[in-house]
Length: 261
Image (tube, rainbow, N blue to C red; front, side, top):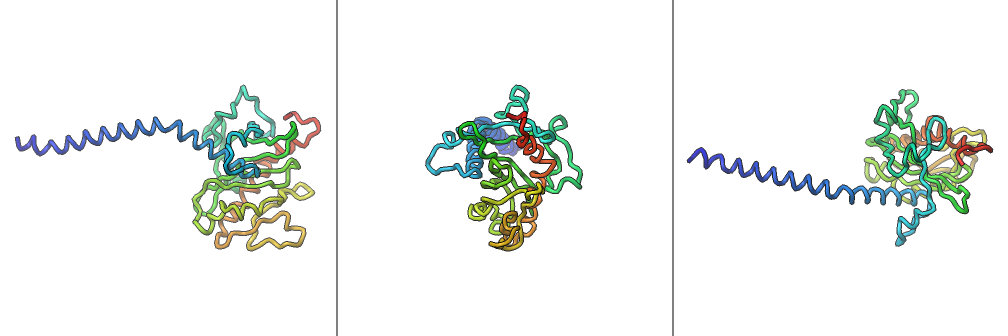
């Protein structure tokens, strides 16, 4: 009886742990659709922020109506047919980790520190009267402590920045974490990605950008006390708007006989 009594609390705890694990697992499965819906809602909100289209108090779904979601093959810059890859179900970050839809990057190429690159990227087209007025593009790159994720909106001229929204990172609050400060992000508006010769030139500088001078168009205010985070932002810009990122896509869009339509 003594042995049976001593074991009873152990078995009770075991049963309780088992029941709790079932409840937690059930809750996780049950909440997954809601969590996915919230994730997509937040994603759309950040795309709207970057494009300058977000309006407080209005439905995100309504505001997102003029935005068309497509998939681009990064190497060629061509749109992928939706019957081959559905943009609504495509998981870009997961694709980068697969052998079929991603590949490792050579260290000399990987200035953004992302290690692997997906073959296809989502792009978000903002149109008015069937005219492409801006494109919102997903970018990412290594900062000081984390990978920084953002959307960058580019004008129809394929060089002028309309806006940016950094939506996920693990940088130091008050320092590198200021990349998500809307006042700092507003300073991106009107900046140029490329020089007239087509060279990628936009970068974050140390300190404030001079209000005069030819280089001001290609410079973004620095982040006080966050040199490595700022360098990471410059690196991700150089990578994603270079030959291994969206530059082939921009080249396709600039062709008179553009097959992208």
